[in-house]
Image (cartoon, rainbow, N blue to C red; front, side, top):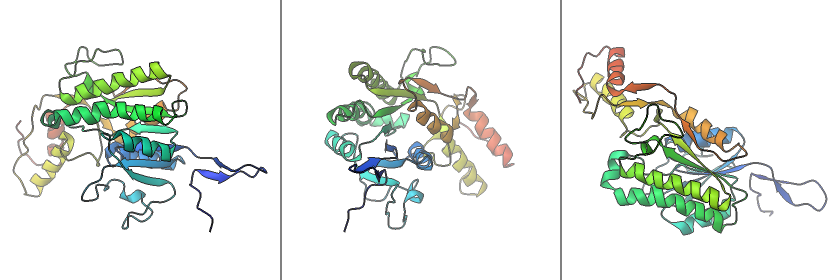
Amino acid sequence: MAEKRPAEFEEDTKEGNGPRRTRKVALITGISGQDGSYLAEFLIDKGYVVHGIIRRASTFNTGRIEHLYKNPFGHFEGDNFHLHYGDMTDSTCLVKIITEVQPDEIYNLAAQSHVKVSFDLAEYTADVDGVGVLRMLDAIRTTGLVSKVKFYQASTSEMYGLVQEVPQKETTPFYPRSPYGAAKLYAYWVVVNYREAYNMFACNGILFNHESPRRGETFVTRKITRGVAKILLGQQDDIVLGNLDSQRDWGHAKDYIRAMWMMLQHQVARRLCYQHGHSAQCQGVCGRLLQAHRSGHYLGG
């Protein structure tokens, strides 16, 4: 019985030629998160074969991507979608996965991305968000794919921290105020250095806040929306938040993942900021939601 050929290959009809690659292959870290799940959908719709890296857990943590399985109940993958167990703290597994997948594009979205948690897990955040990027870039070099792979690093507006100008842009000085922001800044400069030292196509996309129904429940927008829903259902009386005067530039995750892909379609690697250019206060978001539901409950910080 002939071995089934991977979906990205087809037989070349010219005499004497073997299989040739006809479809782009993307590798996504953090594929089970908000951005990773939307990016996987986007790339599959564009005809890519998508591979994702997930961490081993005692329970399936693939709720956002189960619909991409050929059989979501049995977690069977189709021809266009494949998952691999791995971790940004394990360089050996990264080399193994990249060798097996031979990707054209790598999107590094894996991170411990919660600012408050980064103070509690500072060393872990640095290892995953900072040194993990170094491991991934070194894995590309180790596998000899420097001239083939295009690498996208998900940077963050938290690198600006104590902002030096408003609005921020690509040339705004960085001033991180959390272990998360500092780890991401290390990753940012590692990407720049590997691009310049090894002529690698490696770029930073500086993402401002972006939301969706798939946003993690510990982030402020989901805290607000879930809190309002529970108040209306009589399950709780109020919502406890932090600084209600803080302002953020919020967009939708689908817009941002399209921008990630567009960056890797350029001939030259660049750094870009992704933002909508309109900020909103947390207090205003709460007020509009409650007004929309005619609740009348008061929210305090």
